[in-house]
Length: 282
Image (cartoon, rainbow, N blue to C red; front, side):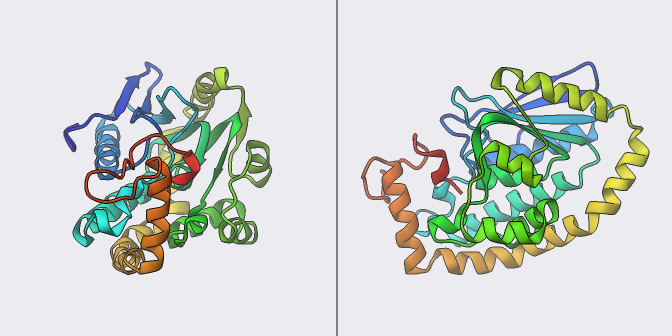
């Protein structure tokens, strides 16, 4: 797949008809434009391959982070442009909408932290398995920006609008058992058994004939996915106005400064791709 010069994905094929797709962008799998492009290209490739019926998404990092979400440098207006932000937003959200309605069986094997964009990717999957330690949720409000409309709506579809309303407005990151109790994840397993558990679920799900399963999935999800993809462009325009506002620039600049060890963002020194709290990405 040649969508980007970098290669942040590791794909391993299984004879049972599925692939393991690991995201490996050290240190925390922060999701910039290039990574979203790679994910979109990988989905194109896998869906076009008649030998592939399912995909397990996992982290290949050394640390326990599924993905810390969107790279703040893609959202911090002084370090980007409206043109690049629009491409970033359309690429990421059109990929997510496609993944949600993909004919493939999709499983998220979540090791450790899974905030914001990582949470949204996992919510687009058919089944979510999480390790015993970690957290998951959409925490954008804590950083002074709104939860994207369709991301919030997707959480509402999964756990109900009432619980989602409370979690999203308060930027709650759930511990694994709380997430399972609400239905945001389907199972909790020890870290060393995560991939084996995901593979066992995949084997069970692939026992269903593809035709009926795929048609039912489309009936349940296609309209929402189409609305999501169509909304990405007008949402990008409104979001850029928000991101360009002085209050949000100040808030995100503070986050970048913390992530870069106190250096002010801008010029050559934000360090937004460096080591920081997984909760500090979006």
